[in-house]
Length: 146
Image (cartoon, rainbow, N blue to C red; front, side, top):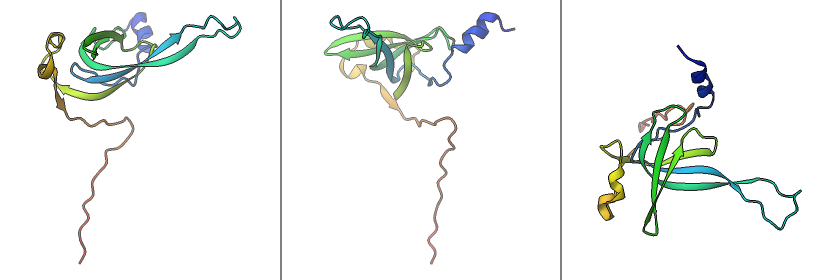
């Protein structure tokens, strides 16, 4: 039996979110509000939004597939590791792109925080991105007519 809370939460779920798993390299597009400049008059002060991109490796996915689900994304900037936790279904997140899928055997990749060099690299897993509504391309073999 669905409750009112479940119905309310289903209206805010994003329909087009990709299948994100630990080991994937993702690009997260997040909306950011810019601070208004002080030298402009109050009439010209408006909330401007820009998109900030955070690209990194997914260490973990938590809280299931519901409205509270989150992913932890890590990237290394000039030798310093930076991690951010993104709520997947938040209206602040514009879109999430999966760039590369990694072959992993664990659900949480927290061990990557300590390792460096070749041990921090994951093997690639080949994948084909199929868009919704498109039919797969069928190959036709042409025979030589003599």
